[in-house]
Image 1: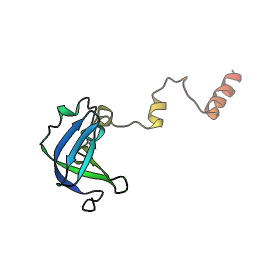
Image 2: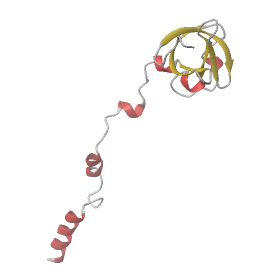
Image 3: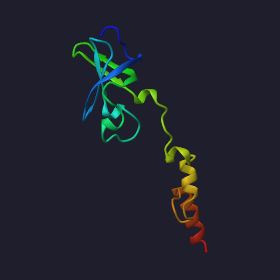
Image 4: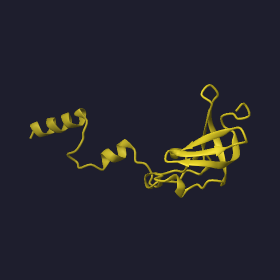
Length: 122
């Protein structure tokens, strides 16, 4: 386990698959776990849809817990993050969103006070 540090990218073999993730054999004495949430971006219903026992994979070491004897791994960390629809659109500022409202929408008290003064003088 001392051979592996957080941030390392290593190659291993899928040694076992469970509903919560996959065990990866990094060498003959060391295994780590790729949690189901670290397999890919998006929702993963079944780990078997992405990995098979015996398959060679490249993983990134997320954490090494020597006391507990556990290594956390990730496939997702080596993938490019997909753009979502929300990220495709330019983000509007708060002022842009306020400006789009109806004229009787949000106004500052100062603006409203000027309106009231004009209206009372009529």
